[in-house]
Image (cartoon, rainbow, N blue to C red):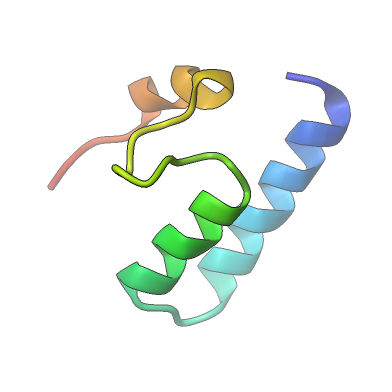
Length: 56
């Protein structure tokens, strides 16, 4: 990932963490940033993030 992408991803994560949002709003936000696709899978560019996510 490029430095600008990392900065944007960190800003998005901070925004999501600090604001109270429901799951649907978070998914829409991640999809609009092209991090997740419509099936809620990581896009090819962000596939390496899958290893950091755990399902509850």
